[in-house]
Image 1 (tube, rainbow, N blue to C red):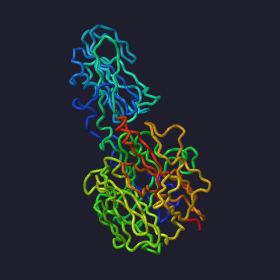
Image 2 (cartoon, rainbow, N blue to C red):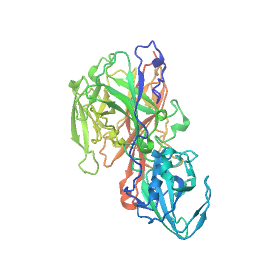
Image 3 (cartoon, rainbow, N blue to C red):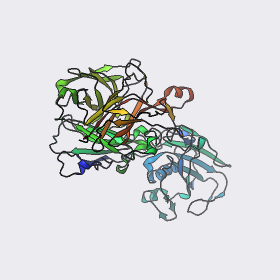
Image 4 (cartoon, rainbow, N blue to C red):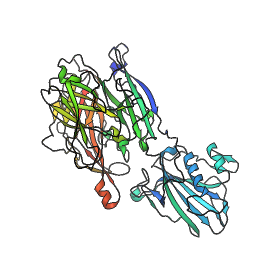
Length: 566
């Protein structure tokens, strides 16, 4: 389906097809939904002009305000500060602001200040206080012109008219960040630097963060409810995996890193199942947080699978689907075929959660299965929704013929769906596998490729499997991530299949990580998959005071389901 819920395969478009699945699109949350003020006087501040964690300056809207009364500069109670707050909050897409810097300048002489904006020159008098307000945005996210201003008796935005009527605005312009190594500021300010604005006056600058910028209040959430003939509203396993950009082969996208559009990119495009009750079905949901919050037309296409039952599969205990609640309850109808328990895999205490969920097959599989998982958020009759991407970041642990493990965050009501396919399940319409190639994961105890109905492209060259350091705007220049190119065995699919992918990491994880998997392209004969995890180098923080972001390719499991050419 497209990100707007429109079908991408011919069989779904056929109105005479009783087996087709349609999507009903809904919206639960807006990209900017917080009603709390962005800035308040009692908020913590830093001395100096806002900078990002790399020391880079931001793209900003600069407005200069002049008050006709003498103020005590830098006390935190200056009337002009509140007007800066109001002005920046009133700009379009103000929710995308990362913060603001306000400079107090008290003049001890008279001077003519020449504007760069649409207003007339204004003479500052001895004792006047001037406020430079810089409303900071991520690179390339400045609001469009014209910038709202007040001049004389006219005012371009009503919300500011009363507040600014007694204040002279005479200088407004866009500023382009000119940070270190040509970087432009990205993400919330993490430091501030002192700057000299001009001579012959007293000045002090403070940096305030937009306290709503990275909060759960600022998240987009869109839903897709599957509809098909004979559907019953009961717990069943559903799955979705995003497809980036061009659906077919793309030389350009093939070399790009997954989610390479900036810092902390795992916060965008998180797919999960959303359920209002333990005893009813769920729907697909997509959420993004902070700077990654997006509108409906920005949601990527996605593959979808509903695994309630497959009547054509004769070996019932070799094709297991399950729905597990946050408390470990089995909600699907086949409770007697597996058991759920909790176990600890991390005694260091350095990273929490330190537990895994164990799913034990009853009886054991007759060979090594392929397992995919998908997070489910249970609202339990409330309006509570995820507030951070880590709550949805499931990782598949060790898998063997007796059991498999799932690592999950315990800070929210998150359960999971799973699909476990044993070796006796026919390959015809269900290609699947566990892939360790091109990931650098070399633990021989776990690193066993399991290719069922496909092969990795012969002569395929892997990109670097070592960790890559990301900057504010993504990976280093000229860095490539080719992922894994999968060739389906003949006969090929009749139309593009649904490809569901799960991140896999069988070893202990000693740090907080953010896993991400995408399908880069799908055709009837192949699929390109990229799976990795982001993490911060906490040790670097102890040495330099900053945290470096890294990305490393990791193994994955996948299932491709679709009708095969007869």
